[in-house]
Image 1 (cartoon, helix red, strand yellow):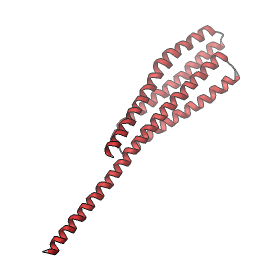
Image 2 (cartoon, one colour):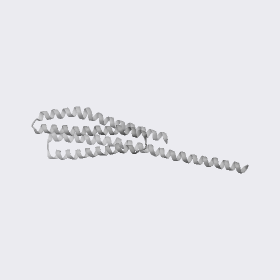
Image 3 (cartoon, helix red, strand yellow):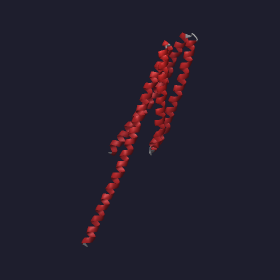
Image 4 (tube, one colour):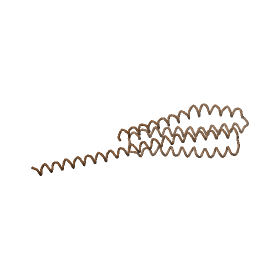
Length: 188
């Protein structure tokens, strides 16, 4: 009888320790997963802020080149354009790597993020075309028309379309980062 009780106590104790080990293993995996989600969200947030910064520098360089038309301005435009496309590549790579996390929510967010990246890419390509058109007007001696087109482009396109795009992307990533951080804190 004593041996039977001892065996039951040992089995129950072993089962309890095994159960705790499994729960701890599961919990640490969950913490790791939420931490990775949080890191990805903060990285995406940083990528969008970097894109915003680089894009506005590029727009300023393009406007300076239209106004000043110096060799220094030309070099600045090429440099800022290169940085802009590098920032877009980083953002695109980050958006496509989001799907590698085994998280159904990240799968759902992937298409929205890829769509945002596509909108940014399309806007930046269209803005290059618009700046080239304004440059062509300036070269043809239509300075006043070029200034009007530049002003209209700045107000309607950059302020009216690009700024809301970047604000929405940054806000969405800020929300994702906050949500991931809150889920991590709740789990811990």
